[in-house]
Image 1 (tube, one colour):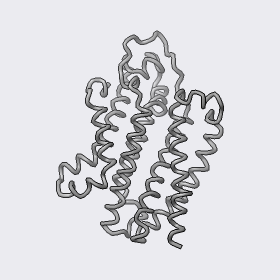
Image 2 (cartoon, one colour; image 1 turned 90 degrees about the horizontal axis):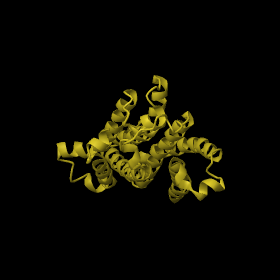
Image 3 (cartoon, one colour; image 1 turned 135 degrees about the vertical axis):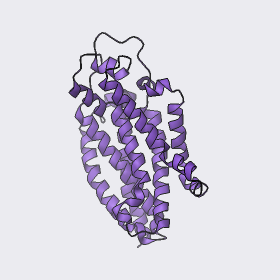
Image 4 (cartoon, helix red, strand yellow; image 1 turned 135 degrees about the horizontal axis):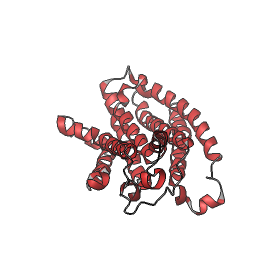
Length: 266
């Protein structure tokens, strides 16, 4: 396991996300420092991808010390079950976080910004990275449990934890999209007053978010989220809690924040 064999790995990922959170302030000082700037930009996605690749290698090789192998798969799991655990377990969270980071870096290439100036594209990228950095810290603190990155000392004779369903992957994918589009909304509203170059980005982000919000809210309403038993112990399903947090954030960005920005321009 990469994170356990390299003790500094997760702290380095946390630090890189923290630096991203201040990318607006660090953009200018790092502009002329090519190697340092590339290291700053690509550290979070590369480190997260390393975790995902290490997890995939452990799952497909049935590494007995790996938590998901020991607790979910066992030594007799077929290839399909290994792939399912990779896509619905902690690997789904790592993949989603990596996707968020890569999307933020490549945000200047969005179709909505094809006609934008270099300054506007740089503005969007730095703020998208800052948004992703802050949320990366939240995800690391809430969803990166230490037990998921530590070897199992005494593996059980048989799996003791049920695998997640494919609906878990769908919810993670949808909430990741909400985070991406919330970042677009937050970034475009910050620039739309001084330049109309992000207006198309704002309109498209709001429309995409509204459609995705309908789907996610329906899924959350059908989950255990609004039962008294879940609210009594929300830490029993942290993914659901984070999904609610992201969905509320995206809802506020799309309704209150975007609407107030549009109203100011009337």
